[in-house]
View 1: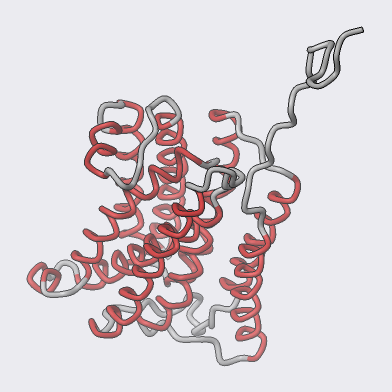
View 2: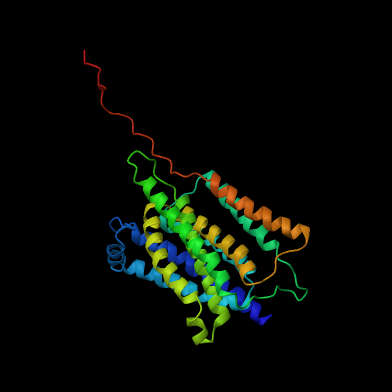
Length: 309
């Protein structure tokens, strides 16, 4: 019980740090000139000049540290169920501090996503001792087989979203595409953190494993990509989408890779499959663009093409 209590406490702390970090970074980015992933060095020079952004990045980095403690004490899927509860705090903070408002359709979508994640968590198989077994190490070839295509998919999706956003007459994006792309990168990062938690304190084994190098890659790419996406899109939408993709990716593929057992009972297996399918369907159906503001009524008493008498 003490280990489980520590794990739950660390997960709640990670939730708070992540939510505060994203909101602080978003607030800082709204005050900075436009950043671009095509100029990563310039982007980094811009953001590190903002004390508010630095505070947010420190909070996020501390959240990763808390996540490491979580994976040493809780099963992967159970941890994801706690992590997703942080979306509530994120929505509250973005509403209070950023003045962001979610539409009714988006609120229903976020509720459906939470339900999907809950279904995945409920699909956990009970070992009879009150908690599921915690996986240790995973074969490096298996981790690379899972992570490298996921990294490539995340980079491709982000690049495709960037190309579509550059079209002059395209409606402004709501951030779903960006959230999915960054979520895939953070999903790989989450698996790498899980791997590090199973290797430590064997430092030589750590540096012969793929985990520190996956963290370096996802950290560098995720930093640049997430900042550009946060500046353009609402945190109250992009972060829940990113969190959903990351959590489902980690819960499903992490369970497989680290041998934390899949459900054999029909009900639990149904929950796992249905929850994943629901989350994917919601992401596909969520609005891809922010509504454009209605044009202000013209004050010109003589509209174009109508001559004065």
